[in-house]
Length: 262
Ligand SMILES: NC(=O)c1ccc[n+]([C@@H]2O[C@H](COP(=O)([O-])OP(=O)(O)OC[C@H]3O[C@@H](n4cnc5c(N)ncnc54)[C@H](OP(=O)(O)O)[C@@H]3O)[C@@H](O)[C@H]2O)c1
Image 1 (cartoon, protein in one colour):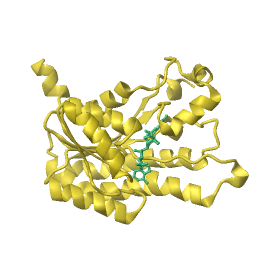
Image 2: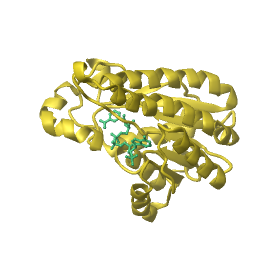
Image 3: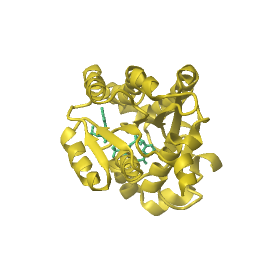
């Protein structure tokens, strides 16, 4: 057990999970809390995050940032960074999970929908990382770098059958951006990796699952099930652990084989 704690343990680490109030972010937050980390969560709705944090606090430490942290907006990002800097001198793990999707027929695809998706999934991701680098750099060492884990999507490397043009291209951009940042931040003892989930039954995806039908959606999933909370938490904890201290610039599909076998 001591061996597993050494290579996979994240107890005592400080983690920030964006969009941690629900869905994949809440699953990742829960995993880190149960593994003994000190977990902060944030989103545009501090009330939702406070409820989630209260629910997780029986298992360990989960703190909702009391700010309206809209990551697509400079003011929202500044509020998150100010709050984290006031509370912590170091940040071991940043999980950039907050994301948005917009679906519309090509002829009607609105510029506002495009901007909403790119402002969060690409621009917000980039500037939040930029502004949290000082806290991450303070935590990282050569043997145990600080970690940035970005939540991309398998839609970033295969073409979805839905008209989510901004989403798929924003996720491809976030993968490329993560690899670029991995290169730049390695000398500063910060790794940057991506988890690319398959279909996870969150608010974002549940409508599609209900409309198309789970059985139909699973036709192209070799392992024949949806992505689950442990798949997300387990991969994030791995990427945050000593076991992954020599991995950077990786994009890991956690999708039952969907994207790699199509
Ligand atoms: N579900 C899937 O099948 C799937 C597959 C591949 C990748 N992903 C990715 O996984 C991540 C999590 O998605 P999910 O499925 O868990 O969706 P979700 O349930 O809709 O959760 C999205 C989270 O992001 C937050 N958020 C949205 N806009 C924000 C903004 N402007 N600023 C800050 N926070 C914001 C939301 O909180 P507030 O509304 O309170 O702000 C919420 O906590 C996303 O990056 C998504 O693209 C999901």
